[in-house]
Length: 124
Image (cartoon, rainbow, N blue to C red; front, top):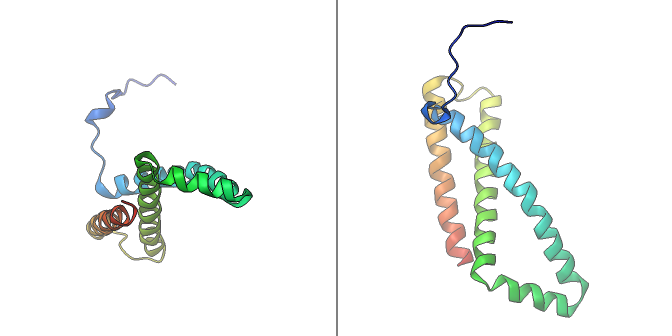
């Protein structure tokens, strides 16, 4: 196929609509949770192996890096949950047109930001 159509290779010039961005962020948060589960399972295994392992995990969780990772995982979980509810409502027939989809995306981002702030206050 020999097409003479122009090709835009500069991805920074593409402006996606807000519902598309929230959908992409939903997928990214799912990947973050998938990877984070491996570390959480390792910590659970170590904490249940012995009293010394439990003390080791408690020591790790007092470091700022571990708190930041825990906050990041909680934020990803909250966003993934809220965006998942939005997707389920869209599957049920709500917020399917352009304007209501944008409003639902704004609501999703506001709720996720509030959840992230609450999670940060709880972790730190």
